[in-house]
Amino acid sequence: MGVFERDPLNQCTPILSTEGMRSLDNETKSYNTRNNGFGAQAYSLSTPVDAGYVLMKEAGEALFNRVKEILAGDIYGATVAIFVGGGNNGGDGLVLARRLLESGTHCVVYSMAKPETFKNEAKLAYEDLLQNGGNLVSVSGGLPALPQFKLVVDCMLGNGASGELRPAFAQVVETINSWNIPVLAADAPTGYDSSQHRKGEPCIHATETMLFGLPRLDAYSHEGASVFGKVTVAPLHYPDDLVYRYSQDIYLVDEGMIPLLLPKRDEAGEKRQQGCAMIVAGSGNMTGAAALCTEAALRSGVGLATLATPKAILPVLQAKLSEPVFCGLGTADSQQLSMTHIMQLQDTVRHQNAIAIGPGLGTDPETQDAIRIFLSGVTLPTVIDADAINACGSSFFCMEGSHRNTIITPHKREWERNFGPLPSNENYYPEYLKQVADQFGIVILLKGSPTYIATPDGRVFVIPARNSGLAKGGSGDVLTGIIVALLAQGLGTAEAAVLGALLHQKAGRITREQMGAFSMLPSDVIHNLSKAFKKFEP
Figure 1 (tube, rainbow, N blue to C red):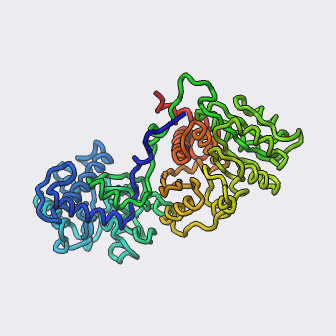
Figure 2: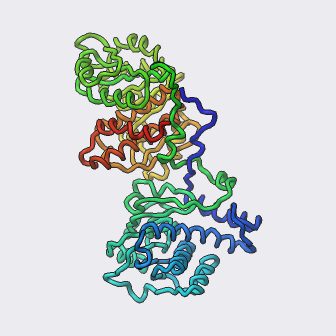
Figure 3: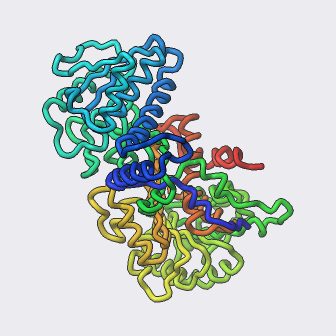
């Protein structure tokens, strides 16, 4: 079984709010000045402005490196248009322009601000640009109708935008969007309101957005996804204790965490030592959900999977699946889970390490009663999904002695049906989910794009998957099967939920690359679980 001496989830990257990032920047400038140095780098610093310029040069250098990657071998023949505002976001663009000129890359710097309005570190960046032979082009002179630029870099407002754009900015944004040229935005596309977490009209539709320092939730939310494009994060040198001070216990998780979370396998162990999982699933009209969930569990490392399902549909499932142990519930004409099956389930569960319940069980009132009564006596790690969530609702988890070693996996409609409305703005999901996870003592995996995983200890993990090929009936059943297999192999509920979502995302991405979003099926994702796991095996 997998046992951790430390919590690998502590290595995830913190997500900060816009306000938190501003405070972190200011605190770092003061820290930098007090310590006459910046992180591991040695600088001779005398004023807070100098300290701020160190951060700005790091951001500009990150932009420069990314521009080189985007342009690849064409960097010397390409022309880059950089649009700058008068604040620090514009200063980042001025540093980029200087570095491009130094490298021999032609660029045109369009300025929304008059040169005399640059202040502090942005002023230093402007002076450095002038010393290297650069200059500014005022947008008031007009923009070309058919430009020859290979790339546009948006450094106009970044996170500083609030409310509707002023007419001059709005006109430039509309022109850039009309060019149909790739756009790299710095920190946030111009027109996106980072304080209200909403895209304005107009708004830059970036091909890619580079975030500086640490990620912000805006870039991964449904609202931001359509304008931020691909998201990259350029780390800056912040003192660890300051990052910790502004952390809100919200973390970005990517596929790089998979090898850190995978359970260790006992190479000499027999099947029960690799974990035993019981899946309670299926009814007369929904045999597919049970089959998908069970096969996904078997493909995710569990040593023994037991499928408990109404006996009438057993022949169908036995024709689909060869590897699981089957527990036929009730008599030959039993089409759905009922109260008469509870003792049989209780007897079978004694031999298990983890349980998944819900896929395809249906919403018959007696089935829902049976789910609640069965779960009230369970102490094993459990994944509650689909129809089992509908059976339990919020009232079940409020009951004295209700099952706490639990992961629930609703999508948004299931959540609102059982727990009430989600916040109207997605940026407030994490704090809301934290409160509910703490109240009920359960792990919440809210499926969607992105996926949010809230744990009872106050952490929220954000998995920024965007794959419409996974938005098909049966995908959730596959995810539940993966997670119950990981629980059975000894992972804790938080680790199993995060790793399960990552593996599901990775297998889904591989499947989309092979088949495309239109044609891929949940069963195809199961077949690619081997590729999601194999890369990390010894």
